Amino acid sequence: MSVKAKNILLILTDQQRKDSIGAYGNPLVRTPNLDRLAAEGLRFERAYCQNPFCSPARASILTGLYPRTHGLWHNGIRFDEVGAPTLGNILTERGYRTGSVGKVHLGPSFGPHPPAGFEESRDYWARHPEMRHWHGPYCGFQEVEMTLGHVHYSTTSGHYGAYLAESFPQGVDLFKRENALLDRGWFETWRNAMPEQHHYNTWIARRTMAMIDRFAGEPFFIHCSFPDPHHPLSACEPYATMYDPADVPEPIAASPEELDGMPPVYRAYHLGEDNYFAKVPSFPQKIAGAPLREMIAQMYGMVTHVDRCVGLILDHLKASGLLDTTLVIFTTDHGELMGDHGFVLKGPFFYQSLLNVPLIVRAPGAEAGVRRELAAHVDLVPTAFDCLGLEVPEHLPGRSLRGHLEARPLNPREAVLTEFRPFGGPNMKVLHTERWKYVYYGGEPWGELFNLDEDPRERRNLYGDPAHAGQQRRLHARLLDELVATEAAWPGRGPWL
Image (tube, rainbow, N blue to C red; front, side, top):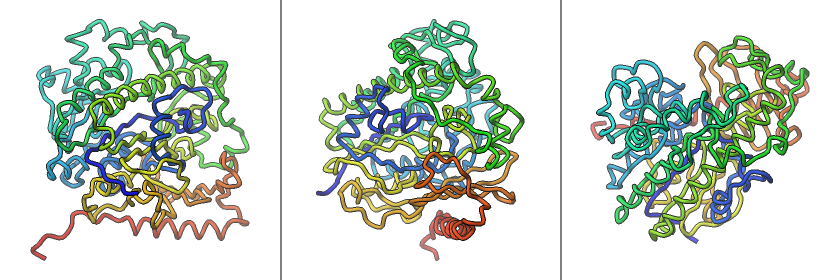
């Protein structure tokens, strides 16, 4: 069995939990198209993102580099593709057609744009309506058709905003909370009135299929990126009422004892107090119970909507005769806490529901099944090169997954590294091994240590426990080894040396 692809279709969602997909064991949510993709491809159970925030995670997916190397270490920072070439940059140089539809989010979206970055600035689009005629190049993509933001934020900028202005101007108001089909005033949650046929998910599916048609006949790399199910949790019909909040599963419950053993930022966020991430309403007082169940129901609706759009794209790829020559990768930038341990959204909280992401790979000639070995987002770019029959660039720290696809895993990972560096907080590094999770907070007296075999729900932090001091030291040393082993090898030496 040998894997060889001609094209790449990378499908991304935003802030999606692994367990929001039927193929990953959810008995309630309806994801027939992702389930079919998983049945025809390889489903990775232990794939990890390299950052729990959108922009850094996406930059790692597209460059194959860690945030400390590609430089986009937090949202709101301008990405420099000269210092960190993307898969699109390199494949464009190799003669591939490259394009992106939907959310890119490698540049600042809110506030005034920086001197060199305007492409994803909502402020710039508002002041420059001629941007609707601009389609790239951008970050290695020869052609781009962008959405900017989520739900109501998406309507007044980007190419999708231009589509609404020209084809369905009333849609600008239908996404807004004041025009909700149902709104009980709960945190980040309402049912929106946008018709499915004009929703950005549907628009992204249509524009991706059109790009496939334009690129057909040439080798291509298409990045198809859905903004959902990122908050606000707000589905359109029929998805908004598809799931009964009474039926959704209970999250991993919070407990005072668990919070006592965690770094102080966890308790502050849980109680709605000031912290170095973001201040949200108190989970026990404002979110737990009926509001959370409605959040989950809306999230499931958004996932099913995306699943339908993924199905349209895959069916179109098959009807075009391209499915069996295309490497299809489905993943998300990072997960979502969604009530687990008394938290919602994302942030510097390193539970499995946030870091352990869905990853499904369907490749021509590949093995179908499930892999439980460790995998990482930085592995996707080397996998793409390897499956295209191209030499994997030496500067990439990840490992190709082609061996897994051919049922002959070579040199499997022993560890995965995740990084987070907040504004105003400590630099954090997370190490996952087969059994353990270790989190180091630079310069702080606290940390995290979990035995994932014995404590898969991450209830008991063993950091500082004398009985596990030896294991903590070994993982700390392994973390240092992993940081050294993944140091930047870019740029390479020139011929003058």
